[in-house]
Image 1 (tube, rainbow, N blue to C red):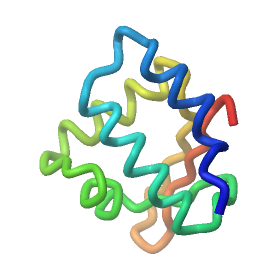
Image 2 (image 1 turned 90 degrees about the vertical axis):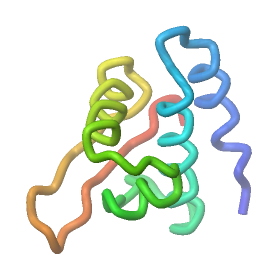
Image 3 (image 1 turned 120 degrees about the vertical axis):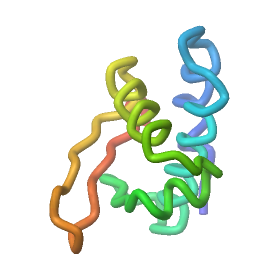
Length: 94
């Protein structure tokens, strides 16, 4: 598995002064899910798994960080409002 695909988006993310530790934790959680799924795009996520991998324990923090990562231009997020269908995320600059 070649995780070097995340090198460019991580460099861009780290240079963004708006990004804080919670954004980084969430991106690492999303990247963990991507690596579990053989780095396929889009990345299918569940809130429970992202929160577990990123150690975010508050729903408000989860939603705030996810929204901000999209507003900052680091991800494209397509929510699923159906409990049995996972949401989709595309990491930009991959």
